[in-house]
Each structure stands twice: as C-alpha cells, then as structure tokens.
Image (cartoon, rainbow, N blue to C red; front, side, top):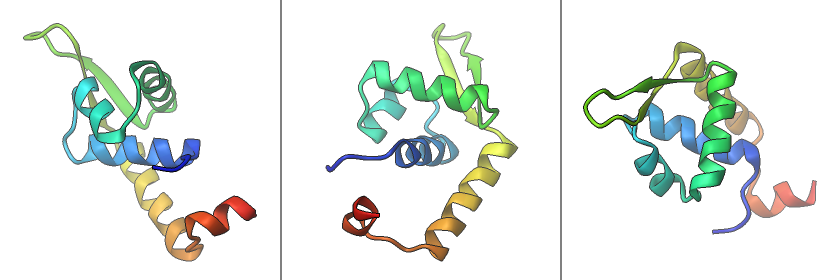
Length: 94
C-alpha cells in the first residue's frame, strides 16, 4: 500500500465505523494502522464530532459509533471524490 493522506485515513476510519466496526482493534486491522496512529486519528475524529466513544461495560474498553455529522462527512467526501476523480499518481503531482 502506498502513502495515504490524512484525509484517506480519516475517510477509511469513518467508513469502517459506519459499517459497524466499533472496537479499536478491529478498526486498526481494517485500516492498517498501528495503535499509536489509530489513537491519534480516533481522537481527532471524536473531537470534531464525527465519531463518538462509549465505554463497553462488558469488556471495559471503548467502542466507537459514527455520528450524524460523521455520516454527513462521508457523503460529502464521496461527492468530492466523484467531482474530482483523481488517480493516486495524479494526486501526488498536484
């Protein structure tokens, strides 16, 4: 996998959480991030209200859910991708 932008990583996390991936370990594996990077991005998305963090009382760890604002962000990100269909190689030269 080539270098991803912060935008790509945030979009990947939002999609994973929207599709029901709520545990940090599952999100980490699905998005191919290390634990430290994942924590940075989950905190960023949470601070901006795109995901919410809830404590799972059964296992004692956090679970993540997409918020309405997060769903809206995904729709807007997809719209931008449709309006500006750039391949990886073209994105890097702009």
